[in-house]
Amino acid sequence: MLQSYRGTVDALRRKLETSSDLVEPWTCFHDELASSQEFLGLGTSKDHPKLWAIVAACCRIVVGRELPVTRRALCHVRELRLWHGVCLLGPHPVAVFYFDDLDQGLAALIQDPRGHRVELLRFSCVELPPGTAPILAPRSNQHLS
Image (cartoon, rainbow, N blue to C red; front, side):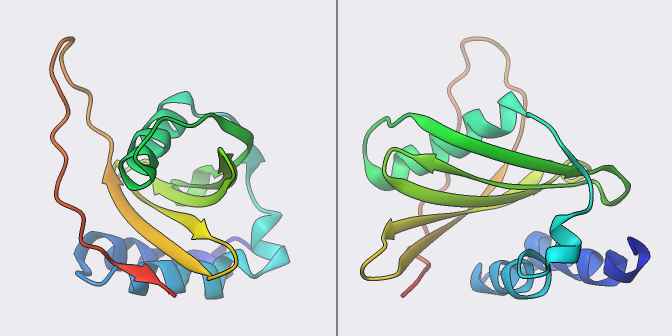
């Protein structure tokens, strides 16, 4: 069963790395993987504190203030080096996927559920020496409406 998703996951990895349009990797993940109950059943439920901290920091940029991360659910498909999950950032639902071999992922933050506005945030996980401030790239203002 896992092998049937390898091609899609490899395509997702390439899109995440190279696409200048974040809608491409998001649509690939959402439509081809997250919509499949079979795929969602793969892997194991795990926590990843570093990933949640990065998701919270990225989303804080969008909403303009610190909000608690609650109702976290995260799955790790070890053979595909893929993490995926959901959480609430304050009142905002967030979906995320992350490749641990790339140290790169994408978060989708629902800004306004009534207007279906979704902010897409690509991020990289890099360990910084203590006391070093993170460097944030300018927002691309890419969103789905």
